[in-house]
Length: 560
Image 1 (cartoon, helix red, strand yellow):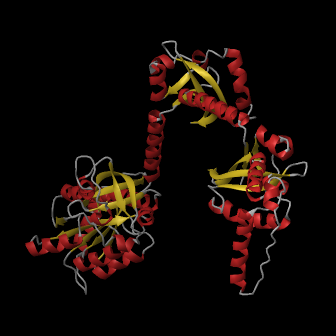
Image 2: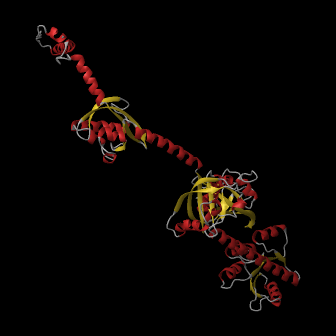
Image 3: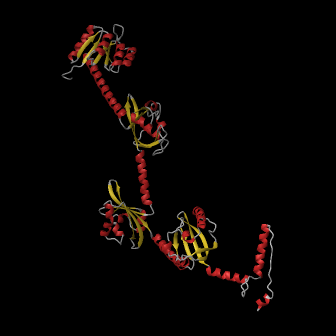
């Protein structure tokens, strides 16, 4: 008993004698007492006094408008005060009434003093236990409602949601009122968890943790980790669920696994090494298989052990621009040495990156053996092609999609008179076409060629006249073709000087239509001209006259 505080017991008894006897007993045992004789007074003392009684010893059968049961019911509606009933009648009917309003029981009138005191002490202990439970429930309620982690209470049998805190309502996107009308099935995704149980079934039974999908109000599904435990709450055993949204962690884990697989399964060689010790931290499968070393062996090595062209000092000098943040990446070619001693050429892309708050070097290494072989083959082919083009007797000219000269072989210099230095990068047709009308027509045609690679003489061989640098005209034969390079149409022209052939053809033709002695047109030419004139007259529908002169004895002269 507290030396500074006496527990106060309110005795409600319409018999003052019995009330006083009871008060004397309680006083002897250290209790402060007060006596009232009616239910109305009991209600007044319990509810309106500044200091309420700690316990009420209530007679059931009281004189007045309300009996002890009614008075107790009114008091308990407003204050939580333990009430122990006094009765001389222990009938079933009385017992049922007592149970309806009190959890502290009753005492028969006239019982032994120590039985009375024991019952009062038991009532105080029950009350203290109830208060402790209430405090724990209030603490749980405060923690439950105000915690920023989503929490749900469910009925494990029916799966019905009994309560949900603010964080849970915010996470799921429902109001508290709506959630209390739902069951756990409504928010559990259809995904199964380990063991093949449906998510909702596992949550009813309890699991620690359950990892499953939960369906939000907007239809989105979130991956969650749920911890559950049974709790006694307001006289019921419920399942307390703590819900952690691990969607982002799960995505991050999947992304990490993706990049880990990307690292390990890459056909290129990938190396990660320490910026100070230079020792390898990780080496992917492509590198291990190409080099012939195990991962354990490589972790005892540095890049210098693989690069015979580098010393430790020269390799450190190579890394300096990255360490000083002067460059973001270094790309260089070198050779790698395999475990069996064989060498192979590589292209290395080297970066200094931050990983897990530490900087490391990451090297992407490409085996360029095939590229080198292709480059060698291409170089040989280019040399052959260059030799052919440089030694060709015909001019070979190439222009880009802007009409600018990009290739001009020695034969072009010889035939057209312009040196390579004079013509490369210039508009070819400004040099070759003197008539501006023809040049404008060419420009219109070239617009179509730029878009389609087609033209009236593309893919054909034509004879034409062009102008030499010194101004004289020359007869040429032009073969023109279109090639597509980097999404643009380019033209390749092969020009052959046919001036001599044209002069010879002209001579033959001249000889065929003139007399070699007099150089006068012969009968063949006369007949050709006559036919042409007749055709012209027919077209024009005009009359014409024909006059023939016969030189007497000319044939004799001609035949001599």
